[in-house]
Length: 294
Image (tube, rainbow, N blue to C red):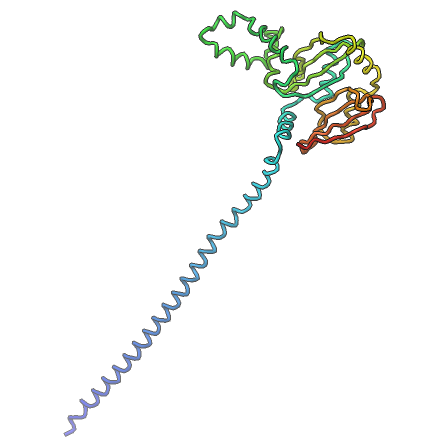
């Protein structure tokens, strides 16, 4: 009978199907392994990219260091240089205007010395003390607020810059304690000297007093100097700044070590160093120069 042949063929077909399924499983496993390998490669690439992204902000912050370095020159200034910078920056009245104002305060007078000074550096501090009684001489103001004495002082100080008129006698002296001053020595023909203090911000005369302690010899010497000085303070200052560019902060008529009458002019340059330039008071020529870099 031929009925036994179909089972043989059926078993063979099943074997073939199993082999095909196994091959497909191998191929699927290989595909999965390949995909995992690609995913691992992509992950490492993403990690590297994120690390690079983190590095960018660090680079962008580096210019701030150069900005901090640019601020270092100001930090490198010496105390004297800082003081000069502060004084000059707070001064509004130039030396030539101060000379004109000082000579205008003394009839027939000529400036023989001029110096820019900070608050409280005036030679005639005793004048300020003597001026304080004029402020305290307003007993009505003090007695009016015995319990509130702290309050009048702030209002008094605030009113002083604008309120020279309320107390014309001596209120104009109070601003000098809080701002720079030009302190001038002005001499008349007989050699008598006057001290004139000028507010270096407003340009107003704070006080003008005659020197009562001069003796006859000092007056004679001063009279001789102003007669011999052919160069004005302004001319001497110009000769000095032509030699050394900067801001004039002081000038003084005096005799040098060789007994030559000179204008000794202090000039502060852009680096806040001070140079003293000596100008022959008769000819206007430069006779000496010395720089203070402290």
